[in-house]
Image (cartoon, rainbow, N blue to C red):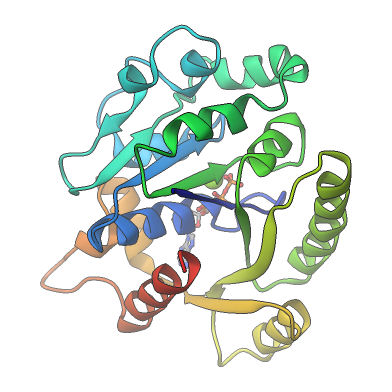
Length: 253
Ligand SMILES: Nc1ncnc2c1ncn2[C@@H]1O[C@H](COP(=O)(O)OP(=O)(O)OP(=O)(O)O)[C@@H](O)[C@H]1O
Ligand SMILES: [Mg+2]
């Protein structure tokens, strides 16, 4: 049985793509057959991991324009790592979600059911917002984990997210699990960060702390996994390596 995890907060720029892409690499490097679904019309995960625009993309699959296997790309740089891409330019996923998706809110759930025999771990990189597309992706997922940056507006965003998720669970009969948070670009030395950690985490959440990590941007520019990035013999910080290993062990249990 496969497991599907979405990384989501409706706020933009908190690290959804970075965290979901890096954990997908970690999962694949640890030996699990892993699929990253680029469910964001911006297509950032796809421009990170693909050198050329894909022939087919997620919106083609959703509209029956190609078979699933035609759209899924196997990355040669990481064994076990597969991507169901979205091409940002042209906006086909955006158009689809603004028009046809209203009539078929469970389309992503059906897609993930088809994928579950092919992959052990499925990860969704989500777009900012909490509209139709994000709701469809959430009801298709077993679990959602929220990345947030340590700032006051993220706490507001978290409150809104928790409130909206409760409505989605009730109105769309979703049993999605939610008990984990990633605080991204966290610095223990900064009091405001420690305060936000306390305020966001509470007793009910497992919190993962990801430090400021310059390798993420460089790996995204080079189109590779952060774990494989090396410059003058140096790669990810030990604290970054440790948190992604821990996260990968815990989230698939
Ligand atoms: N821990 C980190 N340390 C340093 N830079 C980071 C870190 N996490 C993310 N970044 C950088 O911050 C930028 C925004 O991150 P990212 O694109 O992952 O956010 P996002 O939530 O996916 O944004 P969007 O809402 O637009 O989809 C990227 O340039 C990324 O390289
Ligand atoms: Mg993103």
